[in-house]
Image 1: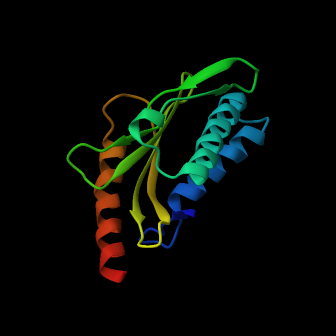
Image 2 (image 1 turned 30 degrees about the vertical axis):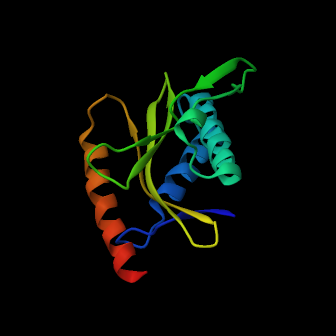
Image 3 (image 1 turned 45 degrees about the horizontal axis):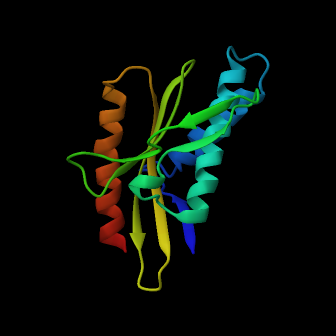
Length: 153
């Protein structure tokens, strides 16, 4: 069995779940510029989350997916999961669109003795550029959340 969990930050918020919900809200708001782009990004995020609920954290050979855009075009989602170099056991969940940039959600997972996999999301951002201080700050905060998780469990 695979479970996806959203850890609470120091303020008690499930930042990743809230971030994804906010993308969905922007997708439905006609007043938001590029609401269609938010809809496309949210659709891709939910597609990959459903995929991970089915198979867990995909092995490297299953990290590229093909699906359809909201307009019906075939699209390829490449490297949907990637290890964060220098920060094991943290990984990043990756979805990109031309209009909005690169959605990144940091997570880690645990395989228990009963064969279950528990995925824990910590922080999410949208990167507009390859180098992002906000993303680096999210990595640091995710490491703190991971340490707290280990101390409490």
